[in-house]
Amino acid sequence: MSPDAPKPTPPARRPSPASVAPVAAAAPTVTAAPTSDAASFGRVTDEGVVMVRTPDGEREVGTYPDATAEEAIAFFARKYDELAGSARLLLQRVTQTDLSTGSGQQQLAALRAQVAEAHVVGDLAALDGIVEQIATALTVKAQVEGEARAAAKAQAAEERERLVVEAEALANTAPERMQWKSATSRMRELLDEWKTAQRSGARLDKDVESALWTRFSHARNGFDKTRRNFFAKLDQEHNVAKETKTKLVAEAQQLSTSTDWNATAGAFKRLMGEWKKAGRASRSEDDALWAQFKAAQDAFFSAKDAVVAAENEEFEANLKVKEDLLAKAQKIVPADGKVKDVDAAKAALRPIQDAWDAAGKVPRKDMDRIERGMRRIEQAVRDAEQSKWKRTDPEITARARSMVEQLEKGLADVQKQLDKAVAAGNDKKVKELQDALEARSAWLEQVRASAGELDA
Image (cartoon, rainbow, N blue to C red; front, side):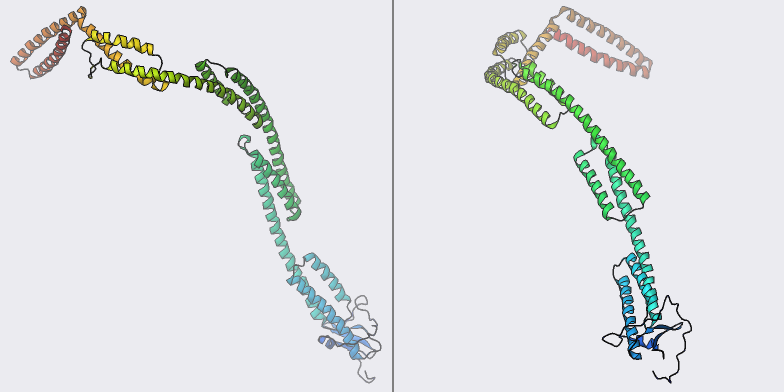
């Protein structure tokens, strides 16, 4: 710079020594031109001091010994470009990457410190603008992250609430309706899900998490207590059932060799009813006891069935005899079911009945049919005999004849009254007496018919 050049205007406000202190920069081995227009904001005083222009006026930056003014300004302009590049990079990371707000704030604080102490030449107002953009972006990012954390916290609380509600529902299920194996497995899964949410999910407020954990823990403890009580009671019931069924097995084994078929079959039916009422022992013990009980029962009924099968062979022959006897007996009674000659019918039926009794038993499946057929024949003969007795009983005959006489006399009296009513022209009386006369006439005919049968 020429000694005759005008002196630069002193800065309107000089920065404090703490913020900007003139420094003597070592001459670099390579001098390169700045990469921006930062150099346009600087100048070199006659004393070789590099100055930078700011909105508040000029301020000293430093000195650059053994270099031209252009080289000195270029040196401090490159330092500005480096600092501005760092600022723009941080702005990009804040606005375009997932850099956390906390890390961004730390880097912003470091950047602010560098800018405040920077001895550079360039557009410091623009650099301050970038810094404020970073600060604003971090504020927005903090708000967004806060909202995201709040949403994540609310979702985490909702998820924990779901786990708690499901655990409480399991704990409140009636023990007799509980599927204990699947319910116990599910309760363990709920605890694992809780731990996973606690490790990797959003952190809840301490009071919220404490309240939810208290409910969750209470539900788990209640479930465990109910399960212990249920299985303790179940074990007790199993023991009682085992004791009862053991006695039933012993009784069944004693009955298994009995040949009193009907009584023992009834006893086994009773034992089966008691078995069903006894409840269940543990699965393995109940299965073993049932196998013993069924073996005893099968032994008895197999023996009984063998005897019945042998008897049925004999009974089939008896059935053939009785079917022939029934055919003979059916010829005694006419098709209309009215036996005319009672004495002959009784005489013909008596040897058939004797042979019937001597024939013995028939198979159970045919018993009702064959016995019912014979009872019909016997009943027809008895009815005929009873009818004959009524007809030949003198006392009954006398009563019938006396009634006929009384009805005839009464009928004659009614006829006389009717004749008088007709003569008197009493239509109402005539109608009543005609009805009475018809009724008595019909009754008389019935009695006469009965009396005629008795006389036959």
